[in-house]
Length: 217
Image 1 (spheres, rainbow, N blue to C red):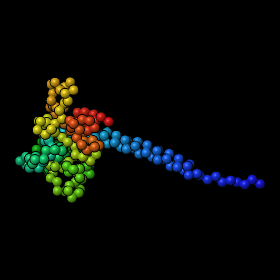
Image 2 (image 1 turned 90 degrees about the vertical axis):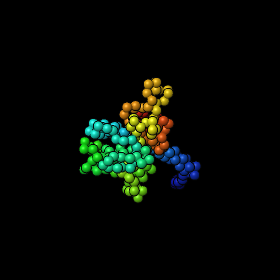
Image 3 (image 1 turned 45 degrees about the vertical axis):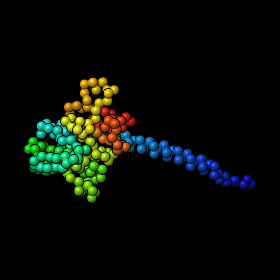
Image 4 (image 1 turned 180 degrees about the vertical axis):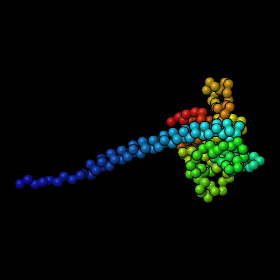
């Protein structure tokens, strides 16, 4: 009568299996991370396009584009940047609630908004903190930002403010630089800092997402 010999798993075989699983996990995580980044960049491009359309409609109705950057609202007499020029605070206010923050009694009688439907969870302060936090609750209306899919404020500058507020210039290597100084010379620039949360040089180029260049991914 034959004896059945039970063959166990050796330590070497077990180590090989562990190594294979580790390699597959690393590949899977890398692919997943890359796809998540792609999805966020796609969403940023779509949101910038949505904002362009909303700004155009706002301009048609009111006769002007929303002011650049962010600041302290002063209604009904007007607005004041209050030394706070970056971000998209005035853009979100103009498109969502009129510049005085009151959609039922807007600063301009020609205002027909809201022009965008923006998730409240995607509104925050200049550091990307949600307005639902304590820090966010103390943020003036004109400094509440439209946050990009990466959690940073969108940046918005009108053509009249390019020089004063750092609009993105056209590189000397671009043939248009012989006749134009800035991208979108007669309209506005909108851009996201992208995944790294840092402005490229010039802003809106490189891995940034903007309405004037595609990100280098």
